[in-house]
Length: 217
Image (cartoon, rainbow, N blue to C red):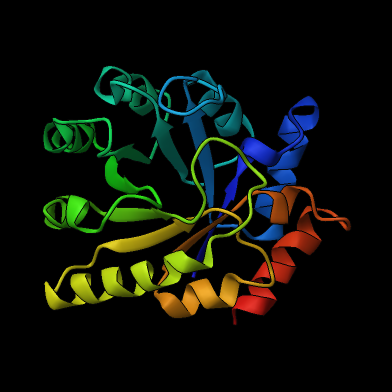
């Protein structure tokens, strides 16, 4: 299982040290949520934040674009060091072209599936992406409660990928903590994103990561 730490819940007043501690705790990727206040209500960070990550860590940078017209911004995130870029189908009628552009930039593309979006919306894209991100909260804010009704969607997606003999990864993000991570893993997740479970753990980042790892085994 790949564990990706969502920096949206980190302490930005102590960002460098937090990322160093996150890497030492044993996470595999850094997950970067980009919101524009239009596609989702919140506003977060831009491509320059990747530079700050790169100053203190060599972990892969997994960018989730929750923005309108993502095709206008993928070049900037690629230039600033993104290893993976995820886009939504809900707001992108030219999603396949955007996926191709991401790959042309040397970055691995991801398609994101909101809780209210049916799997049929992304079925066509399965051969063209490296990963599918299944949201288990409605995107826009950190700290929301996990939606267990999304577990069957993960299992069905796993079956769809297997039937097509693909190696597409399934990533799951939203409200994941030590009490539900094993359910998500059993449903078929290859990559799990955690935010508050890591950065808001009462005993610190290392304890948060250890709790996730131990309960996922």
